[in-house]
Length: 113
Image (cartoon, rainbow, N blue to C red; front, top):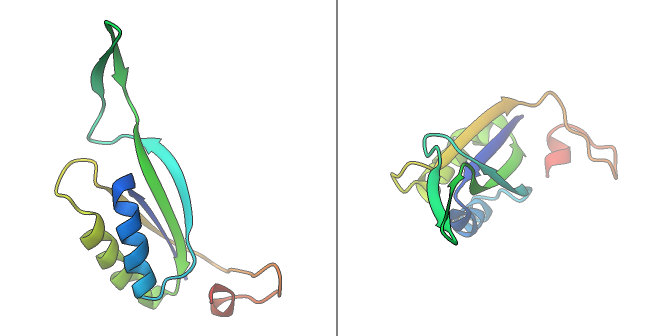
């Protein structure tokens, strides 16, 4: 099993959710986050005062999936969320040793479904 974490632009989330649903991905955890990478920051002016915005709003989408689905999921995320602009986000993939469903005690792939 693998955990996929995608940090994406907020405006891309709805399309990504729909495309993941079409491919059969049902379980997601979604968080509103803020961060920066190559975007660094930008300067703004509010009531005549300069300030620096160092963090940009993003959406973090997490899912644990069977290892055989990884390439397809990465492709869907990339195709859906890419704008070819700095700030499109990142995808992190990590190995999950085990998963348990709390309600039934099921584990492994059965707990993902």
